[in-house]
Length: 313
Image (cartoon, rainbow, N blue to C red; front, side, top):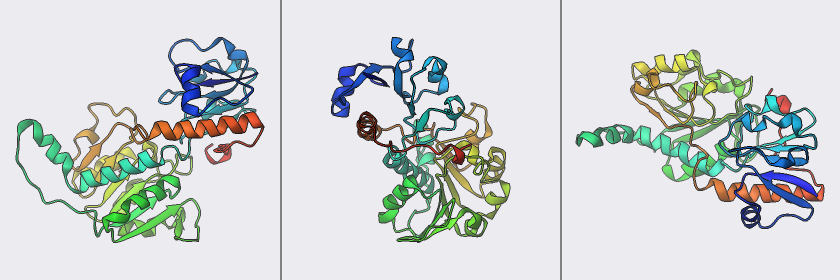
């Protein structure tokens, strides 16, 4: 029997949520809390528990039968240094599209319509109105036009935005035009709302710095639901300090953001604590993906979502 570690409370729960366990698969459960199962030298397929860090791979050297490590996150940069070269690494691309896109649009709405200000006024009962900015008629730029970027665009369809411009690592033609990242400097001056959803790689580290922020038009909004390290934090603090631009951030650098960090009190900055994928939409999509991957693994078929390490190293 091939041993698989799954992040459920019991094999019975795993079978119920995954639509059954394929023949030839033996399930051990590991949620990241407490000691690992005794089958550490037999596990071949390990699903890293969600919201746990690479510490769950502390015993990877003992996993002498390991063939696959599967994360439940789309980003794998934290896990990558701990995954042996001979082990296939898969991510959860696609699982978080709905949840993260939903939050990205919500962050834009909160910031544009000044809902953050009104929420801060509630404890004191301060009836302070403020004229907001509508998402309608705004020019949108999506940096990192993959699955999540496309999901954001679909959710913006009913908001009457003026235009949507898409940027990815490479230019693409097809139903929509996608600009290469080299065009970014020329696109930022016309971006009223910029959604940052690119993966964190050496090429995207510090992608948005002082020069890029300076190119944004006055009262522009930067929405980051990717990784904090894509943005130069010091440059963002300086750019938002005088209120020229605003930011809605689900991710920061560092994380967690220290309580005394100036971003917490910068005018026009709204912060959520890296919860893009953390919603009820996660569970059914994760279960469907894992069920499909286990069937592929049991049948000897190629897995989906295999990470190309060259693109993230």
